[in-house]
Length: 469
Image (cartoon, rainbow, N blue to C red; front, side, top):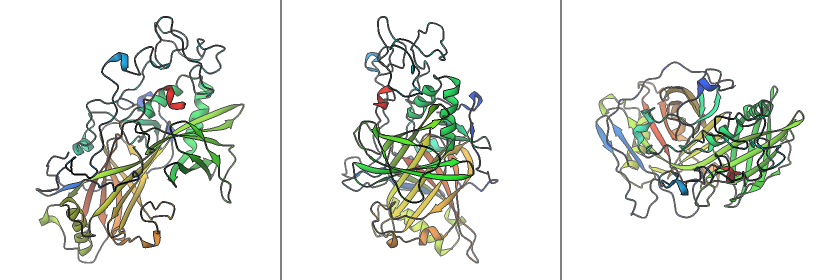
């Protein structure tokens, strides 16, 4: 899985402010446009490896050793075009062959044919290219990146595969990105471009107001989704309870003090994992805007992740006991030692709003209940993977706790020894480099540790109109 390499740590750059949100135009498109919480059952063991100066720690896990390893390769469309759901005539959003009809559209206002009097009548606001007939969908249907290897940690420094962008940027011009190489975000971006300008703007306005979305699972079949929207100069929170399954299911609003705002919001959820699990979930929300309905789509991912750590050379390390303790946890984990001072689980939770913000929470849980939680926006430059985004250290809330049932048992010694966490690389495809800086301890320099966090990618259902069924 990982290959050896030596790497010096990066130094801090200038602070980049993370405020505001603007819709991306064509000039902000980057590269080709276009997996969830721990599974129930046996423990998901992360793969931990790393480097310390010229010394490498850890080896790839043996896929036959009975423990969880790096997940399966991403879903790629079949090589046989007749089996490819994106082949003309197979997908109702692709060009149709002679005599074929576009299936009658569901009643969603971002559907390219919505409002048509019959299944074959296209949207009059839809631009038609040469040779295109009425009722055809996006001709630039996004595809998977077939030669991208999600388990290769060196891709954190590579811009060769482009980025999966949500379609929005912050006030500094940094792009909000996805955290996986699939094409779900790209599919919904292309879909929204097929409606009239007024409907497009209404959809983008709703997407732009989404500040944060989180999903809490209370069983394999039930969850509560929390949506935070910017409404004028206040932040309004909405919660919906919903079953989780392979069909788009309406969620029921949760009524309790402190929830709600001026939007009459409705929501639906659907699991997107090909294996039927719910580590990747589509949230589709609607609200009234003027005389019409605005729609926004959010992809929620709760995945096991793996870590490649980067420590400075031994001669460059301080004798700070807090740094030595963090180093001990990392090296113990890479060497396979199970003594309490090692990593038990790494979880990567993200939300990705189509034409809006995206953000991530990375949780590193130790066997002795030490916990390091880090959260912030998923941002990247148009070119390259280097960024400098401050991240927050987060605590475990009672409802966040998955296997740490009682949040009062969580130990924050490791987290409390950190002065700063920031995102320093984002490849826009599910790999993040987080730089951890130790707090100031008298007589010692502030050592830095890099963690390359790699989402385990799962195959998803195809991103076509069936995703809305």
